[in-house]
Every structure is written in structure tokens, then in C-alpha cells.
Length: 111
Length: 111
Image (cartoon, rainbow over all chains, first blue to last red; front, side, top):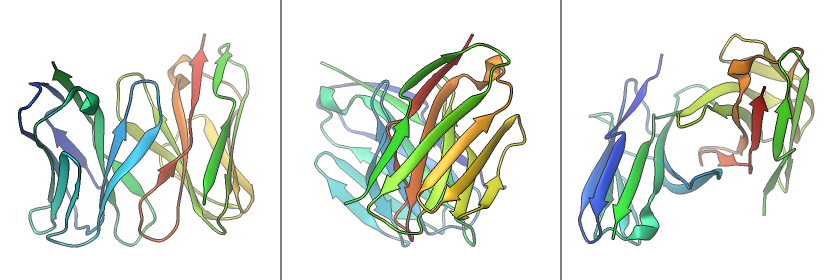
């Protein structure tokens, strides 16, 4: 059974600082996705990573995928308050159409 | 472009009452459709997914059921709600390997 784990679960950081969120998964997959959820809202797609070594960047966020290590990272550069949200990674399972989500990382950026 | 609709947006139901949540997708054909549930402050749990009309895969045995009577319509039902059914219900769709896109969600409170 595919398991997807994120750490940390909670992250409080100062504006201007850098930090990385980690997403580990338990079985082979080359499809990894990152989402953002604001309080009380649905999820919004951030990044789609479809191969080993894939790197995507948007503004202060950069996501990467290492399929050999079964690890994806979401790096935050010079955090700003607007990045405060919960971030989820999700893994597409090989041979099926299922997408399994991680536990989520609640990020709070302090001014 | 594709649009996904869910209704109602919020719902308060007594224990033991029936449930019907509806999801429709516009702007695409033959999508894969998904129901996820998010308990308060928690991650996303995959409940059901469907790859075609009448084809339903259940991920979690419980008192919920799903149906797909039309290509772009997905319905989540229950005959008798439990307190533990409270949560944020999210419908999602996908085509190929691009991950899932979510609808706005239905917030269900069982009292």
C-alpha cells in the first residue's frame, strides 16, 4: 500500500527566511504533485513533476523530484506572509488512476 | 477550459439522515473522477474513484457509496449518516498524468 509522508507537519518561519518541506513515498512512482490549500478553501495545483530530476519553479517556490530516493522537496525562498497555507504533496500510483496525498504541512510565515 | 461544480457548498444533517452530494465537470470528456474527504485539520482521504460510467472503485469500506450515472457526473451518497462522516468533501477530476483538479468542496456537518 502506498504511503506518502510529509515533514514537518507544522512550520512557523520568519519572513525572509528559507526552508524546505519534504515528501517521502513508499513505492515506485514518477508522478508527484504539489498543492496549496488556504483555510476553508479547496486545493490549488502548484507543480506537476513527471520524471526523475524534474525541477519546477514559480516565484518563491521550487519543487524537485528524486524518484530513486522516492523523495520530493518544496523549497521556499525568502518567505513572505502570503505563502502562509497548508501544502500537500500527492503521488500518482503506477498502474492505477489513484492519487494518494501526504499528511500536509501547515506553513505560517510571521512578519 | 474545464470547470468542476459541487453542490451544496455547506450542509448540516442529523445523524441517521441520508446524504447526496453531486459533482459535475464541464469542458472535458471521459475524465477520471474522484471523491476525497478531509476531516477537520487533517489530510485528504481517497474515498472513491471512477474511470468511466458505472465504474466505481471504493478505497475505504464505510457507509458511503458513489455512482456515476453520466460521463461527467459523480454522486456521493449515504443511507444513514454517522457523526464521523462530518468533513470537507472534495470532488476532483483528472485526464492523463496531470494530477487532479479539485472542485470547491462541500462542508458537511453531522449533528
